[in-house]
Length: 121
Image (cartoon, rainbow, N blue to C red; front, side, top):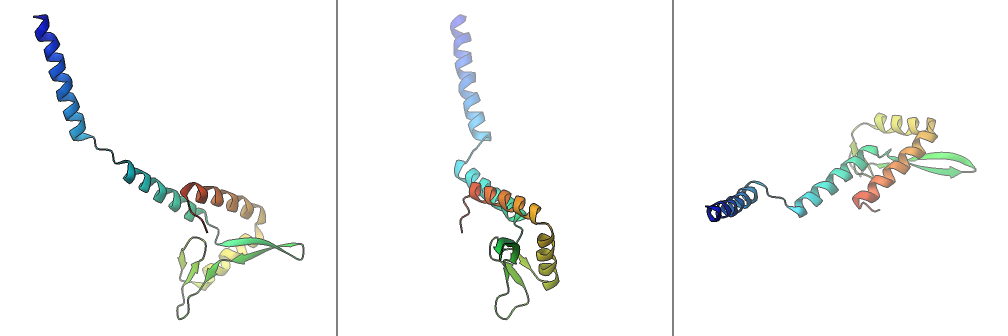
């Protein structure tokens, strides 16, 4: 009787392994790819689309948007986002020029997330 009990546990354990293997499938490469994409998306959302610089001892903000020849759209050279309105680009640059402390904080956070995602210039 005890031999059957032990054999029953072994059979149940083997069936459990097959059931779990059949229902749970974990692909490490896909997970790493998805994680990198998620981190890049988060970094792009934090991109201020400007760079801070010092000109004659004064802080200056330069827009990173460039308009490809023959188009009206502007693309950020840092994150790749596209704006179709020149007014939006100007408003963005003006906002960050008026809030330099927040800009520096945003740039630091953006760089941290970009490094985590493996994004390099």
